[in-house]
Image 1 (cartoon, rainbow, N blue to C red):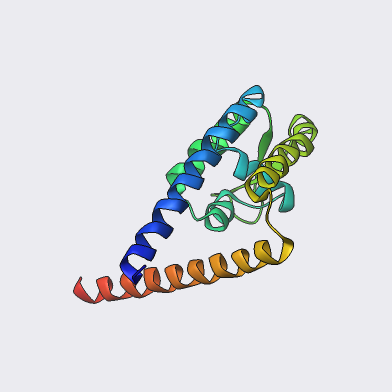
Image 2 (cartoon, rainbow, N blue to C red; image 1 turned 120 degrees about the vertical axis):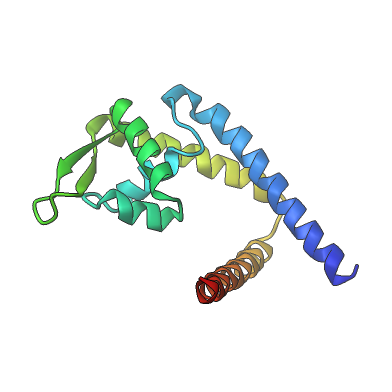
Length: 156
């Protein structure tokens, strides 16, 4: 298989895995009214309580508008709350409510179940090798994206 076909195959497989993941998680998280877009905010916040929305959007690599929609949805669901930031009155600090803390272990378990399904029949070595490969692919993609953005600035 030549490099062009390998690249196409990698992109196609990545897309298909992502869509399968979306479908599985959407179905499993439905009982919490969470979506593929909202649950990462909840989990990221559980590791960084008291951070502002902009920090979470950078962590998840999403734009501010998407972050605003997802945070608003989680607040409406009663999973998170926001408090005014005393150091910066333009920003709010986000915290998980007790209702949010109650569901996090089950959300994590659903994700673990899916990962187990995905890697079924693969050795630990193969999984670790795949993770290293995908991390390298991501680093290359981010570097290229950054270089493209810098080149575009030169045209402005």
